Image (cartoon, rainbow, N blue to C red; front, side, top):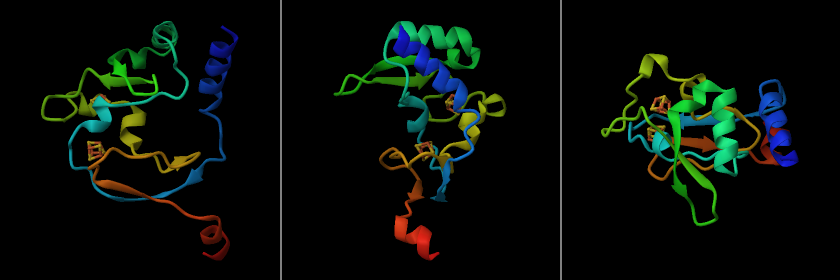
Length: 130
Ligand code: SF4
Ligand code: SF4
């Protein structure tokens, strides 16, 4: 329970953290729909936590648990992605969907295989010399 409260606090605080690194993103969306069908959450470990999150953040009610990966992490999907990989509520998609893949993040996560975007990862030396 304490861990979950900590997760909630982090979720709340994440909206106010100004010190995210900005990455360059190149490429364009190929409209494969993978990012709407296979998503991870860094702070939701049990179904109870997920349901509670949906209660607190109604926007998350569009997501459901579609399974687990080999490490036991939940894989989420959105109920609004069509069979063709398109968003059926495009004009009403969430801000997080509009920003994907995020330019300002703590660290570059891996994009889906075959995704049309690429994250340009900068090394420490890049930051010092450019
Ligand atoms: S995974 Fe990449 S290419 Fe596929 S829909 Fe998402 S952003 Fe577009
Ligand atoms: S709302 Fe649309 S863009 Fe956002 S995850 Fe769902 S299907 Fe994808």
